[in-house]
Length: 147
Image 1 (cartoon, rainbow, N blue to C red):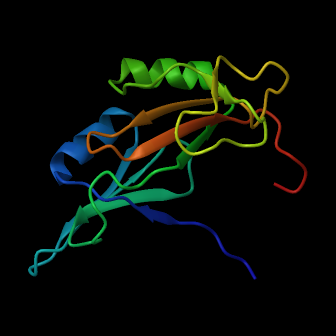
Image 2 (image 1 turned 30 degrees about the vertical axis):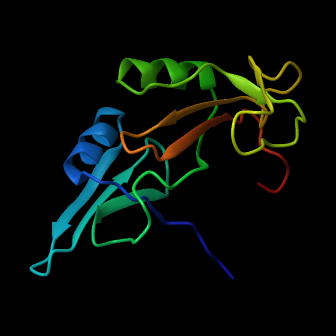
Image 3 (image 1 turned 90 degrees about the horizontal axis):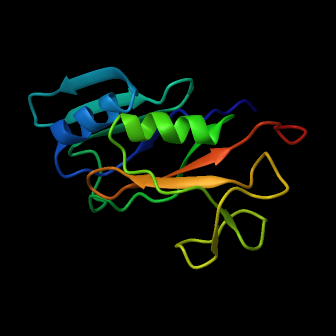
């Protein structure tokens, strides 16, 4: 079986504001379609990603801002954080999880600074879109075997 993650739907309250935010961050605008029945679909793709994000009107019943744990992987988290900050995202400082396995929900187990021993999978930074949908940057320099 060959399956690929193609789309993640995120709930937003203001489609045009979300569209402007993601375009400003450098996400490619792939589509902005409207139907005569009030459906609107906006699709954006993060730089270098094969998977996209869609948001719009009448796409989901989820509350705006309720999407959490969306991950953007980068080989250079400091450079990605710097560029996102320059583009207007409020990206927090680098952090790693105290247990060094992945990371817990919320901020309780976060330790400031990059992971001291791992260049891959252990260092994170976080930001949110204007509705509060939560994004996590994760540094991956060397992928684990099979990934």
